[in-house]
Image (cartoon, rainbow, N blue to C red; front, side, top):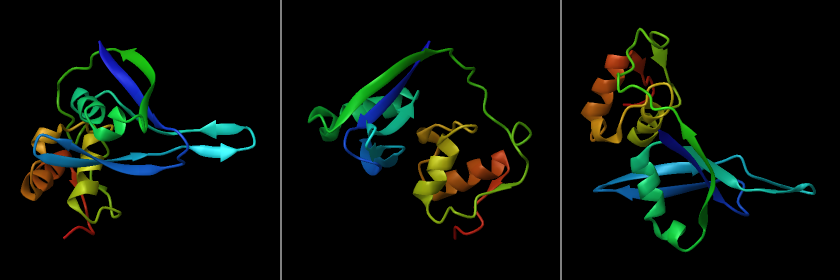
Length: 140
């Protein structure tokens, strides 16, 4: 069973945070918060990837209480099969991608679920995207 954990930043509508994973850094966007007369909904980020959960929970922001744990769900374990271009829309282009960090975010998210270990440099990111039938037309 995998655990899907939602992390929250109370009092924030959205916030971008950088976390260290070994020698790499990853930027996560906490979003979806609101402040209204009905109450406060904290900015949130959800993940079922254990490496990202460990990075968040070992960060100074988590240890100081800025980031807290919200909902925790148990989910079914998915197979370790890689997603191929035939499984997704063939020829996907992401013109909003202009740097490696954004390219990594897209490849690590659903439906691709590429591990961070497979995306260590620009050549690896481009090769994995090509294998999945993805292009980043505005990234040089």
